[in-house]
Image 1 (tube, rainbow, N blue to C red):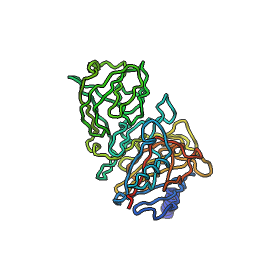
Image 2 (tube, rainbow, N blue to C red; image 1 turned 30 degrees about the horizontal axis):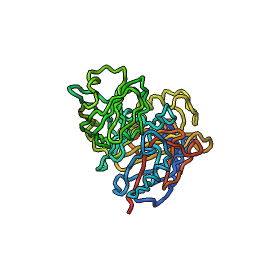
Image 3 (cartoon, rainbow, N blue to C red; image 1 turned 135 degrees about the horizontal axis):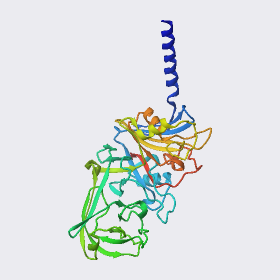
Image 4 (cartoon, helix red, strand yellow; image 1 turned 90 degrees about the vertical axis):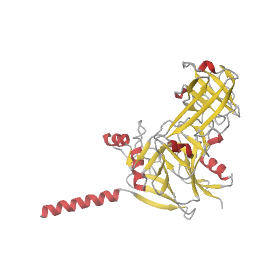
Length: 399
């Protein structure tokens, strides 16, 4: 009996120790900023990491989820704070919280600096298509949250032929054989004449939307590259190596129909959406790949940076939600004695601690920024706010 009691006591002590290690200290920030919005600094006590968290009630009708494209076009970058201020200046809503968004081309990359790698839908306009289909989040006009895998199905009908469309406003080098460039990209396509031909399309009503079917006319065909994008149309780039019977049909004066839709169909009702890289949580469970990598790691060193980014301690940004709340989370990092950052498994674990059941990973590193009321609240690892590609907002109706 005594041995049994000792075992029970040891188990209780182990449970107490586990509870003590899990979680951290929360310090409320910007209290009473808006009904239904809770902001706090979260000092994670398992390792040295400081996080900034925004919790938005999904039941508060005056609060909204929005995204914004940097520089008002794909090519170009802008700080999160600048984007937030620009959105507030529209006058109908005020940005309360803003964090950096998705991944893409931060360097110049032959003129493609600013190009996003995943989904971006803003005010109902489809600006870039989904690529990492598991790591997308959207909100419909009615306020429904979506994070199911999403795909784009698009094509151009011309004559008796149909040409599949793979990408919208993407770099030519990103693997697509056929890419559509809208005025949202910038003034021109930045393509190389040796790599493909371009078809200038006119008569397309803009903006492009997730559920789109409209006739077009061919205004011209160019093999010079870097075509100017008409403000009332688009440019279709076709890889020179692509062999398709429809290509010969694209002559000046010809016409056809552009058809585009997102699947599942509920994604066609999305008002704002963003894509990240890697799904962190699904149905309350951590991504299996992340869990396997974490448990296979032979030696875990707190604060260690590694060549494998999933296992490296880095600044992180994430978006999560549950039935009642939306979570925007920024973890500072690369700053010893203040905050070392997190692995992706640790980030997912903390999101579960906070109450999220679904979550995606957004861009991290020096991009990780947490802005409240137009001011940077966290400590970006680059010691100053970085220009990024897009941003995620919590906005409030202006009374």
